[in-house]
Length: 419
Image (cartoon, rainbow, N blue to C red; front, top):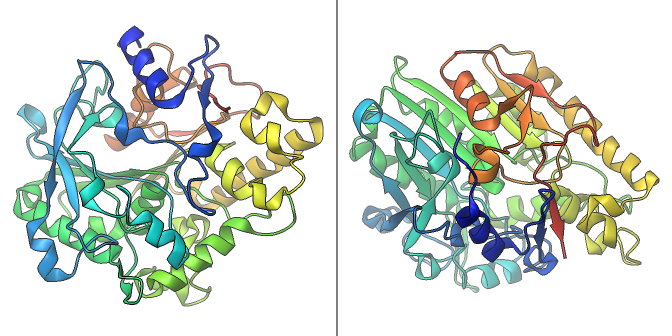
């Protein structure tokens, strides 16, 4: 495996804050709460991972405008595509970008002035690292595939289809998804002999919601699977007894017209908000699906379990920033969250075609960062790093269902700490 050297560590230092010698990553907490209750807590897309990183340019989807497939502010959506070669020339990996959601008009108006709501603010080039890397020593199974990062500018995990004329907001995530897939199919993806839909965070949720649509793009002879990284957002009670994330999701689903684009097999018996939670849909995904998640997901601790809105007296302030500062009762609460996660995937894990990698870390999104995807000190379960576990599952080299023992047993974690 490639040494996770100084140049990469320095880049992470620039991006996140301070990289500690014990493998703990420090992040400014304010990066998490950039607008109301919905945000992605770090900006992976702004990373510059040294001079050796592959930088891939932004392509705007010109045909999208005629389809009404536009970002929140009406600008064209886009993607970054690095062409495959050699044995990977007809293999395609689609990575759906994450970045929280917007659940109110106010939040979406704010968002449309950022790269998460307008292509006017998107980076013209992105560093392709982790599962997007073009180096076999960094990405052993997918390095020479066609690798595409679809930018996220709708705020509803690519599922909305509505508008708010007074606020000049376009909620067209579903149309963006469809326009991007149509564009890529016409650019050669229709000839794929194997394809993988992946995504991180809100993009990880999107990869679950769109998994079977992706499968249906291809003939049955094409190997098609899906990977959700840090997308297993749970419908759980927060530290105040409320349901912070359910309230956020209710706003997203109602405001952005998500209901008609949710799986009918779910909405036939549950309310639309419940069907935006992956725990209620993963059991009915027909295509093979791999769930990569930390048992103590940092984003969910920060924004769903113990957000400031549910903790007015700040009892959880230190714990949510740094797990080493949690009291015994707080750790017990977090162990309860892990138990709920394991319960949510019980039925899913019974299927032989599905894969799991649930490690007991305090982190979020492990497939896009090189240090967690495949490096000398990557997180492991049973001595296997994430990249090899995903590759073995995708190519049917091994059945991968790895679930870690409870915290604090795993010393391979790259835990996140917030300042």
